[in-house]
Image 1: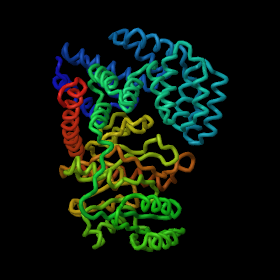
Image 2: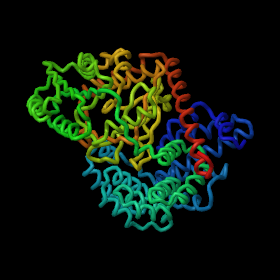
Image 3: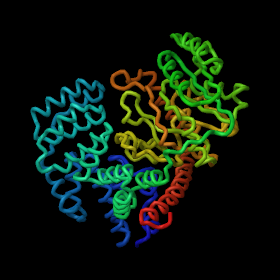
Image 4: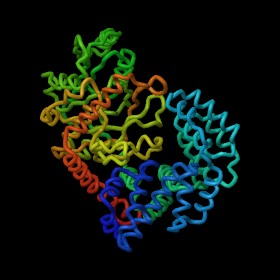
Length: 547
């Protein structure tokens, strides 16, 4: 079978759904590979070969995202003995990694350190282990992971100076990633040319395209997509690069109400308002609801009422009524109801100057959507993604067996190299910054008070839109920084953790398993139509035909 659509039809619904959600994330790719390889034995000859080939390709792609994982390298070698798919270079590298990687017998202290989120203690411990057991790639793997997540250039430099004999292509991959993350794209491109793995090849192609070397970039992309037509995230990215989607900005037609609610975050609120009023919001009104704060929030709003020159409107409450009620209160204000659009913002974000026009471009591309949102990154570590396009997916582990769905988390399995910079439909977008048409918002029934004081009220609202046939749209070219605390200070209290668990249970039980399955099937159809349209365009464009 040569047709992509015919091959696609042979895959299970779970695999198709997973690939539509995205082709990023080591754990995600491993799960899909396992599904394919386990199901291959029940297939007819032609379909069996497709399942085995794709399963091995996905497993190799997962390994290339964490090439120092000796356990995964060993699994690949074992499977390759039964179904040969690795080329000689990949096989040699896998053998070297598997031979030099060994999981320590006692990891209890290391796990406690990792759970404590004390990055300094963790760093010292790992450097000590590296000096004691420098030949064990297990510790190399842990140090690289911490260095990348913390964007610790000194730690990563230490790793690049290790003896990578037999593994030089992986050193080049790491060197390229380190250079890319600090904006040294020319150096990254040079390193990627000598690296191993499809990610390095695709990042090099993107850099060549940015430098005007379009022919070279197109040749690399075409080769990659012909060899691996399952690269859904990458195809979406190339479509928007070629179309110039990320450069588009559109003014929203009509008046926009910009609304925030805040509780005891005076400092963060002040910074958010500074960012907001420095952005291009025209004469659109800004409304802030003080949710019964007892810190200096009132003084911050007093100062901003004067500085904003009447552009800020405030609502002062005596008690904290919670996020859903605050959102409902704001959307019920008569002056706000008269606006054409409603933009909700969190009180601890930093906005780019053109955030509203970037959302406007998403509206212009998908005017029929129910809500439009963005990418959210950590304020202190902006390569760490908190939220991208969100999708409901079936539970995959025994621990999740009692759940009726889970929310995709591909963005948490990697750092931001631009692979989520695309525009497309999804099930839900983050409530940190999302935009509604006022009439559709008013007709949706508001936010469910059962999800007070906070957590998952925005997700529940988006799921309700899905049930009504309205999808969310993710604008990956709008990134906002969110001051969600990281490290030790990010640990929530027992009551906050309990509230989060309780609200998720309420959401799991709000609809039947069959109803959630229906929502997922409906969204799969939306995603498939959008992807196939873009894939067809990309493949014609790469082949030099009329796009």
